[in-house]
Image (cartoon, rainbow, N blue to C red; front, top):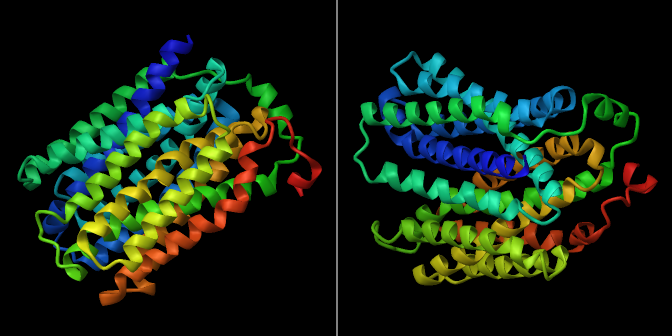
Length: 386
C-alpha cells in the first residue's frame, strides 16, 4: 500500500513537527511553573539532545530487528508517555526525567521517520523526502502559531502538551498498520555480515551536522541578536526566525521537483552557497533588515540539505539503510549543540553576530563533501568501508 504508507509517513513527520513546536514554545510557561532559570533550561535542552542521540541508536537497534515502522511507533509511544508528565505539576526530578524520556522518543522518531521516508521514496522511484520534511516544517509553524495565539497559562500549556501526546499515540497505533514494511528481518540480519560504509557515513553525517548547526544557531540566537545587538523592536525581532522557517518550507516544497531535473549535488551546492552568503550577511552587516534577510537565506541550505542527504544515505546500502540512517542522524544533535552553545560561547554579548561565522564556515566546509551525494547507490567500495 504505497499510497497509504506515504500518507502515514507524512502524518508522522507532521506530528513530530507539531509536537516539537508545542514543547519548545511551552518552555517559558513550564519554566515559570518549575521556578527555574535560563541556565537550568539550557541544561535541560542539552540533556534532551543527548537523550535524542540515544533515541537514534535505539531506533537503529529496533529497526534492525523489528523494522523501521516498529521503531517509529515506539518513538511516538515514548513521547506520548513523557508529554503528559511534563504537562502537569510534578516534582522537578520527575519533570527532568519526563524530558529525558521525551528526548529519547524525539531521537527515535527523527531517525525512524527518515528510515520510513526512504522506504516509501524507494517504492515510488522518485524523490519524496522534501515533501515529508515540508510537512514537518509546516506543522511546526502551525504549532508555534497556535501556541502564540493564546496567552499560555500552566493549564493551557498542559492541554497543548496533552493534545500533542494524544496525536503521537494515535499515529503510533495507526502506524503499526500503515507505515511502510521493509525487507524481511532475515534479510537485514544477513546484511549485517557486510561492512558498513563508514567513510560515507561520516561524510554525509558532516553535511547533516552543518545543516543543523545553522538551524540551531538561527533558532536560538536570531531574536536575541536582533533585539540586544541591532536594536530591532520586540515586535519585529521574531520576523527573522519566521522568514527563516518560511524559506525552509518553500525550499522543501520545491526540492523534490528540482531533483527531477538537476543532480542532487548541484541542488545542494547552490543551497549551500546561498546560505553561506546569508550567514555572512548576518555576521558582517550590522543592520536589522540585513540580518533578517540573512536569516531567511540561511534557511535555503537547511531546507534542501536535510532531505537530500537522508535520501543519499538511504542509498548507501539499501539492505542496511535503517542502521545507516540511524548513525547519520546522530550528527543532527551534534549540530544542534554546536549552533546553540558554541555560537554563544565563541561570540557572546556585543560580538554575537560574529558567531554566525561558525555556521558559515561549517557550510563552506561541506562543499567538497557534496560529491558524495552524486555517487551511484550501489557503489559502496572497500575504501568506503575502511
